[in-house]
Image (cartoon, rainbow, N blue to C red; front, side, top):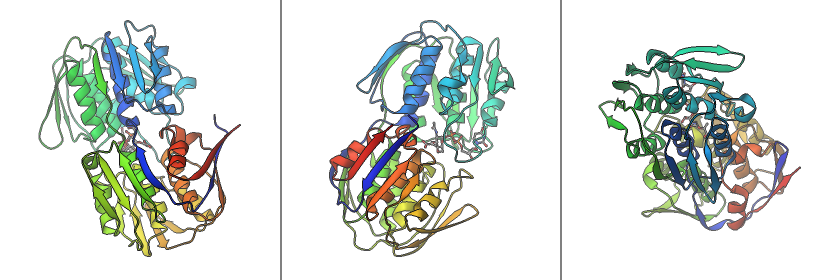
Amino acid sequence: MYDMKIVINGRRRLSGTVKISGAKNAALPELAAAILSSDEFEFCGVPEVEDIKVMFEALKNIGAKGEFINNKIKIRIPSLKSGLVPKDIIETSRASILILGPLIARNGYAKVSLPGGCPIGDRKIDFHLEGLKRMGAKINIEDGYIIAKSDKLCGIEYTFPNKSVTGTENLLMAATLAEGETFLGNCALEPEISDLIKLLSSMGADIKQGENNSLIIKGKTTLKGSIHKVIPDRIEMGTYIIAGCLLDNEIIVENAIPEYIKSLLNVLENMGVKIVIEKNRIKVNPTDNIFPIDVGTKPYPGFPTDLQAQLTTLLTQANGISRIKENIFNRRFRHVYELNKLGANIEVKGNTAIIKGKTELRGGVIKSTDLRASAALLLGGLIADGETVVGNSYQLFRGYENMPEKLSQLGADIKLIKR
Ligand code: EPU
């Protein structure tokens, strides 16, 4: 799996329609939420990507029964055969930390591997652990595992020092089975979290949204199963919209929710890109002159850190100097060095990338460093003259469903080489 290469012959014009898959970052916590009930769940619109497969395997390891076919997951955890989520199953993803909250809530015991995921910064988990400890869990970290025990979780008042996506999801899920009321302040409220709230509510959880990004949860003794459709992936949406802005491409993005991606659409509008927004479709028309911009990443509804790398590639084609400030993760610029190998002129100073455009990119041999960086490098290959080989492409398949096929259908000359 790790020795995969994607080979692109660049400068082909892309046109046509691309359909967006379900959101990986919604499906991940939603699958973990299946731990909270012994009933059956049916999820549709689940992207067939590596991080989801890893989550599914980890759930099977603790006793889940089910199947994952044609973007549908049927799953039921009638009883927990183990509280163990081992390293070898889970080390490439963040799934283990999402399992921790629901598992301790239902089982009273969890031994989960410390989470992996993209090497984009420190990726601390202190808010998760602090919240669970306050709920009554005893937590130790030993040999790369988080070991949590609790007779019963109790409701708490906890305000996150900073917004955390999986932190909010974890404590929210744990609170649905805790005794009494939980108040969570300064929550992240990404669309994926709203979708998780929708699922948990359909399971019988009592969750209300309060003022200033707070959530108030009244714990229940049991929750029931559910049938749930995962929302479309806004990061995949944004990635194809950005692909549509390259060269004189003309792409229609279908199964899109424009509301989820307003921050990107605003940025692109300021760059002079011509975009037509319909109910579930976004059309990107060819643009002759792309203007430079200054933008900073922020929690939703701000500009997402998960699109920073892809926007960087586009800004190599803007006429002038752009700056992107990365405010969420402290090491999320590794794609820059790879893009520079293709002829980009990007300098990183502290947490800001300074992109001098417009540069003609030429093909080369580069390496994926993380999931979103992989997508940014593919976009680089699409505009580079000649052949680009992107190594370590396993990263891409952790979060993008069939990206080489989807690009190929739009007219790209792209192939995947597995060894
Ligand atoms: N943070 C702490 N302590 C914590 C938790 C977070 O200091 O206990 C800090 C982090 O170090 C980071 C910031 O808070 O600087 C935000 O981290 P967050 O917890 O929100 O990130 P995450 O939950 O680990 C999720 C997504 C990421 C996405 C970020 C930010 C999932 C599975 N992952 O990560 O997605 O970049 O939120 O939006 O939902 C991706 O899909 O490529 C990806 C990396």
